[in-house]
Length: 204
Length: 204
Image (cartoon, rainbow over all chains, first blue to last red; front, top):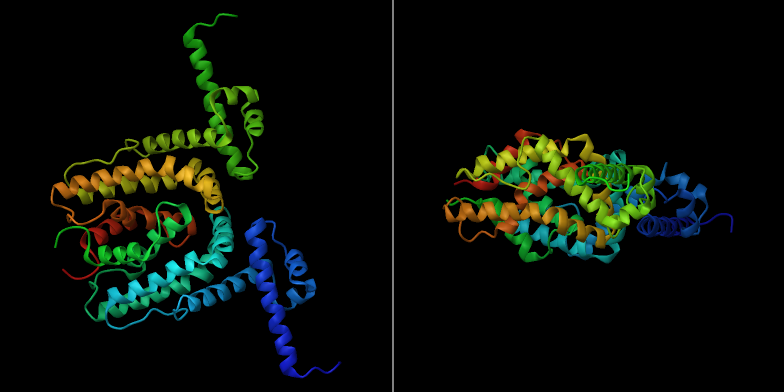
């Protein structure tokens, strides 16, 4: 009993880690970010508080990792490679594919409540907003920057366009519909965003 | 003392209404939407609870009106006609003007904290989100729809474009930068959004 074989220990540790992620996401969805505590996460996960502090420095760190893990899984379940945008040479098709996967992710019930709780906290708590945007959103935004730069090299996007601004035509309307209920979300909608953004609103 | 002349009564009533708006906005900014109560608003405004219930059915109604009033004032202070988009015949110039006024409004410190508190509640409370979007945002969005339809009639926007989707290129990136700290907000930025959206990202 004293000397566990490494595979057992790894499995047990992986099981604890998963239980802690699940507890953190469930708790933040139920009571919101301010009332979520390391103690509460530990109690719900059935582990000691010290187990959490051995791996993470704060509740923000636990939640950050739990969300990264959730996003990875949700992307996989939506049939997408997490943290990639395809580059087939057809920019419109690639953007439509990644946005359809994002639509699926936004509709995933596991994702909905905890993501809303965290986004809501970020709106009123600038530190949380900036930290989670930097760590959860910026890596995804960088993929769009890279894909748009590749399209610029291929002559499919005008040379003068700033990709960091242009990418917002693909993600911001979708984010606002999801966050603020300004309209329904569908594949047809995100396909339309891509067509409008690439070709522009004014006649050619 | 019993019979007040109508002008006095109107002034007193206007003063109470203003005090109630100010109290409601200050309170929601400080404690958030869930902990804001009609009792709390009344106490802070120095009026009886019944005074509030004489004019409004619920705290949501008080806040809704307080925000409408705030938006009107903020737009005026930003030098814009509230609830209008100019139609000079130059679509790009008109959109840039209204977006610059929106930038000023988003930077108005009176607007910042209560608007964030309300937006955050809307993210996690679908009923609040839908009601305030319908009553506070939709009338503003309709102005964009009308302006884009006018541009379609003038041949400045392609006939096949759905104005309700197209308008999101102007408002959603700005809203996301403001709500989620995904980037800085400036006149140069909103001017760029207008140019990119009208001309499109791909070469012409």
